[in-house]
Amino acid sequence: MGMNQISLFEAKVANGNGEQSLSRDVYRLGRRFDFYRMLSFYFTTVGFYFSSMVTNQIKYWGSYLDSLRYIDSNLSAIFREMSDFLRLNLSTWCLDTCTT
Image (cartoon, rainbow, N blue to C red):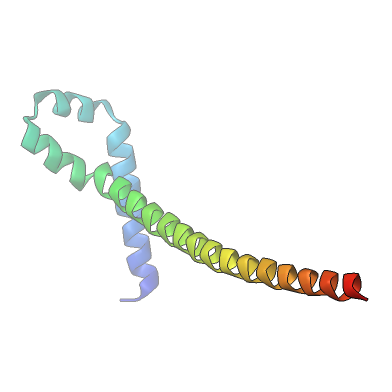
């Protein structure tokens, strides 16, 4: 069994869940289910895909924000060092030119 067959099976199941969630039968079932059956029904149909999407988005945005935080901390340290360097060089230049 290859990865292509597994991918086709996943696509078939996802299409079936999509069609099922758009039907009126789901609405009728949902009105008659108790809370726990409704949660079970949700997470075996469209809830699985929604939860997977949210998890992947959180991982993506979390790594993106971590990289921004890392870049920001490094840039602020670099700019601080550059400003100290320029301030020292400017003060020594002023002292050298003003004294001669």
